[in-house]
Image: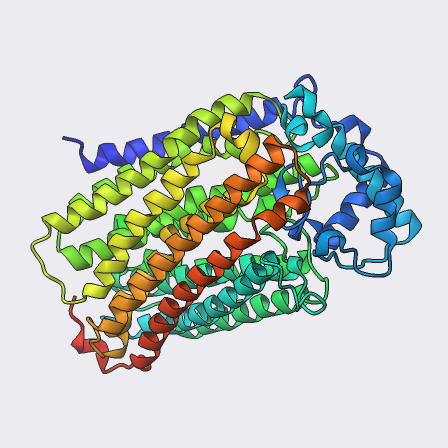
Length: 144
Length: 446
C-alpha cells in the first residue's frame, strides 16, 4: 500500500514536472516561428484602443476572443460583421445605444478614440483563432 | 477552541458573510437585466454589477480562507498566533481595499480584465495585505510545536495563491498575451492552488469530524493535491484553445482537462470514505453536511460540468457563451463557497461556546441553498445550450437569441430566490451564535 512518503513524492514530483512542461510550452507557443497572435501588426493605435477597452471594462458586458460577460455581442469579428461606420456611431453616440432594447452605456468617445478602438478590433479580427473565428462570425456561414 | 487567538477567525467569517450577501444582490441585478428588466442601468450598468459580483466572490472567499487559516493554524501548530493585533490590522485593511475597489467600479474606475478588475494602485495594497497575512500564518506555523501536513498544505496553497497574483500584474500590449497570463492567475488559482487550500481545510475538518487517523487522512490529501496539480497545471490549456495561441494547447489542454475531474472524484470518494470509516460521532452534524456536501458538489460542478465543455471540439461552440456561467456557478459554490461555509459551521460553536449543532434552520439553509444553486445551474445550462445552437449553429443575431432565452433567466431568478433564502437562514444561524468569547476555550468538543 502507498505510504505517506510516496504520496508526498507523487505530489511534489508531479507538480514540478507538469509546471516545467507548462513553462516550456508557454515559451514554445510564443516563440517566433510558432506565434500566431498577430503580434507584428500591433500599432500604437491598437495599444491605445486596448487601453480604452480596459479602462471602460468593455468585457464586463461583451466578449472578445470568447472572453467576457455574455451580456453583449462578441466583438472578435465585429468589423467584418458591422463595418467601421456603424461601430463609430455606437462608440461616439451621446445617448445609450439600445438596439433590441438592451442598453449600452453611452461612453461618448471622441472621434480619435473611436478610431483607436476600431484599430484594436481590426487587429483582433486578424488573429488566427484555430477555427473559432469562423464560429463567431455569421459571415463565415459557408465555412461550417 | 484551544487558543484565544483563534477568535480572530470569527471576524473574517463575519466579513465573508457580509460580502457574500452583497454578492448575491449584485447577482440579482444581473439576472434581472438578462430577463429584460434593467431599471438600474443608469446607476449600476451591467459591467459594474458583473465586476462587483465576481470580485466580491473572490474577496469573501479569500476572507473565508484567511479566517480558516487563523482558526486552523494555531490548533495545528499548537500555539497562539504570533500577533493578534496585526491580524486585526490585516482584516481591516482587507475590508478597506475591497470596499474601495468596489465603490470605484461604480465610477468607471477599474482595469477591465475579467476577474482582475482591481485597479493597479490597489493591486499593490492587496500584495502588502496578503504578505502580512502570510507572515503571520507562516511565523505561527514555524514557531509552533508541530508542523502537520494539513497545516503545510493549507499554507502552501495560500503562499502560491499570493505568488500567482503577480503574473496578472504584468503589462502587455497584446490582448492575447494579456489573456494568456491572466489565466495564470485565475485558472491556476481556482483549478490549482485554491484546491490546496480546500484540501487543507477539508482534511482538518475530516480529522475533527470523523476521528479517522491523521496519518491516513493526510496521506490521501497528498494524493489528491498531487492529482490536482498533475491535471490542473497543464489543464490551463483549455483557456488557450481559441484565444490566438498555438494549436499545441488543443492537445495538451484537451488531455489534461479530461483528467481534472479525477482530482475532484478522488476528493469526493475520500471524504465519503473517511466519513464511513470514522468511529467518532461528532455532534456537529451541520458541519458534516457542509463538508461532505462540498466534496460531492465540487465533483459535479467543477469536475463533471467543467469536463462537459473543456473538450476542444465542444468548447469551439461553447467558448464565450452562458455555458461557462453554468459551470462557473456550481463549481465555485461546491468547491469554495461550501468549504468556507463548512469551516464556519464547524468553528462557530467552538468560538462562541453556543452549541447550535443541529437545527431545522441549519438543515433548511443547507438544502435550500443547494437546491436553489442546482436550479440556477440548470437554468444557465439550458440558456447556454440554446444560445450555442441558435447563435453558433443557426447563426442568428446575438440580441435575437438573447430575447429567446430571456425566459430562462426568469427561472434563474426563481431558483436564485430559493438560494438566497437558504443563505439568509445560514446568516441568521451565524448571528444567533453570538460573539466569540474566551469562555469557549474549555467548552470545545474536539
